[in-house]
Length: 109
Image (cartoon, rainbow, N blue to C red; front, side):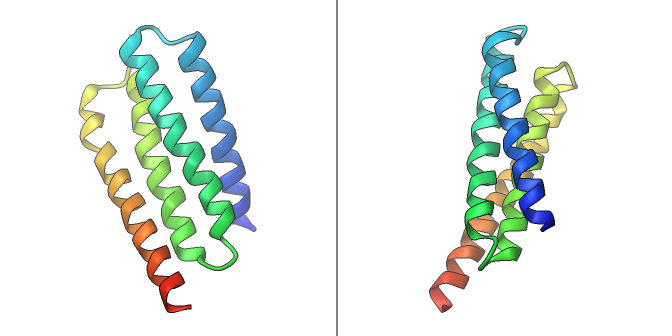
């Protein structure tokens, strides 16, 4: 189950990002990016694990959206150019689509 494996790895990354944000970030903005990215990534990894049996497409969309959203924040926290912040909302959009898609599938069931 690739979705389950990716979700588990995603959750582990989220915990690591949160820990680094709490103990190793270079400043308050960087710590906040790590905290926000970790929260979104962890929440959506767990959600993907919860729905993957019934809604594989939405689960995949949640993981993809969380990856784009969180990884751009992590990259900026580690010194990448701030223009990556313009990419972050793409991940957020994918998260919204994933949730709406899951809701639609559950509504139809």
